[in-house]
Length: 465
Image 1 (cartoon, helix red, strand yellow):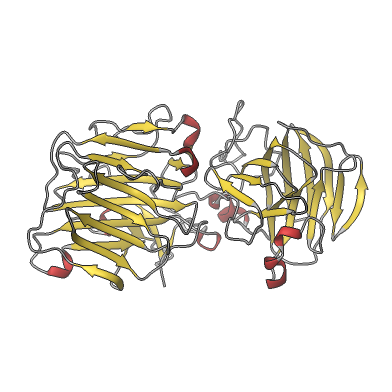
Image 2 (cartoon, one colour):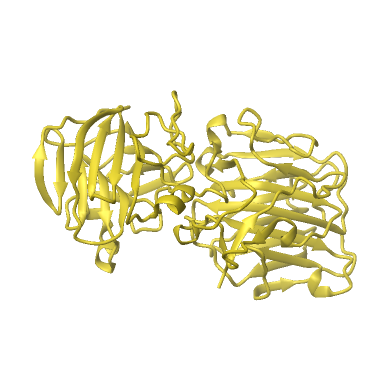
């Protein structure tokens, strides 16, 4: 069983760590977002280590974490996901020099993963010349395991080659989609995963980040901590900074391996829905009779929780609220759940109405317009929900459906509608004010209601999901 990241999912949210990762960077492939720099000094061709913490946004496509190439593809060293959601660690120079492709697939878009890839071609043991670790455990089961010859040279870090975070140099169709944190490349070092992370003493199957500032990064190594929103490509190790392309200060996130935030969940079957911006933006597409729905990645059974949704572009009615635990039947029919048993939501139609278990109960709360921000305060302890319009409560302590157990944030909509969701970790819309909850987490447009908290694993550990 793959060890979990310390805050990679709700179940592991109780783990603690002495080291906190403050920020990550969100990459949206629709924006063709990436960063790059040209190597001025050559790497050690025999030995280096790459460490990246990542959270996926889209599955089933070619998408690259890091690349180093000469621009025409004849030299092309990279780490990417293939269309089968398996990872590839490739060294290519006019042909395959070395390639690791584990049998494992990576399809949990709610979790943070940690990857360490080691190039050590001078190692006397052929099987140790390329190594890959996931969440602290070395991969040993491979679909493809092509070991380099002794002393083979990697082209990664060759002088005048470009290192790119989040895309492929000569073929720009493989942009990264999701989040990255703690991107480190150590030139001349063959480190183990334990140099970058550690298992929790209290929960030995949980993998946690460590402070890596004391590692040896070598002549050309670098460390991206994404803590400067005005310079996301800053090399915290003091080397040449990366140049950002189609990245902005709003792409700095507090959704990190030590505090994982809720996002929308593209794995739930949907119709005519596109998710983007780190799964914090949801758009429904033209269709005369199709209703689309989406849910959050965190299920809730206790606590008081707050999130926001900006009405970016509206056409027709839409609903927002909570949906009960997804049974097999519900899971296959989530696109039609705007009015169904186990759903409680606000419907932006007929003057604004509340719907519970498929029945309209009350109406005329007022409707939302383009640009308005809906706040949802969900009280899982007392089974109530409140709705806010631009910071003012329009529905207070409305009794929710308790037909089924665990509840999830829910958004449903008709055609041509776009929502920008803010669970607090990386808002899909620009925040003009900035409000955290009482624990200091989240970046919300309006004040978080008293005794309510944003949906992150640090809060779930304290208040229960």
